[in-house]
Image 1 (cartoon, rainbow, N blue to C red):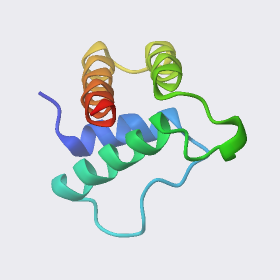
Image 2: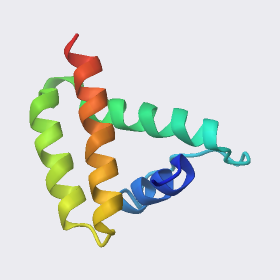
Image 3: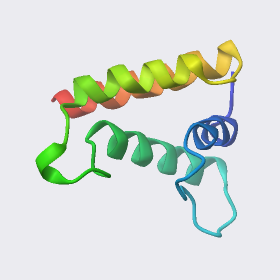
Image 4: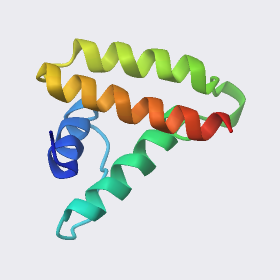
Length: 93
């Protein structure tokens, strides 16, 4: 099983133009928090102007496509998709 430090590094590789972490030491707990926060922002489309935001379901579809096309291991891809599913379930409540 991958650690959250490894998962966060994999997620960061998907978004090379975004700064996702501060200059703090990245611990397992801080990576977990940052990863879930970044995925929620991505699925809620918070980086887009409010008038052109898309539904979380649409953003989820794009996220899965991006993950599957990325040069990551199958284990990393599956773990990232699982984290996205967890956040989607949280958002849907």
